[in-house]
Length: 98
Image (cartoon, rainbow, N blue to C red; front, side, top):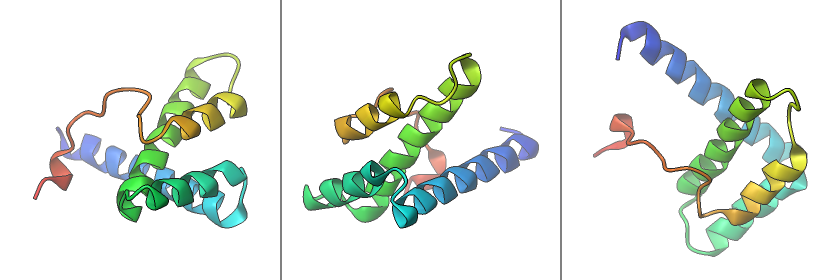
């Protein structure tokens, strides 16, 4: 991956992490915080739960910009309720390997 692509990917991850943080802190939608609490209660480590939620945010973002319908909160909340099952396979992330 080129340096430029790595920088864009890093900025995208940071933006998604910020969206998740805002949703949890503002309870907008409250289902984001509820999902975090549920996953942690099921034994998922907090940082992994945040990554799962971020993955759903990212999927919704890309579907919203790719579809004329835009953001679909019902679809987003449904996907949150399905966690820890992810909506699509997660590509390997070389930055998180030990």
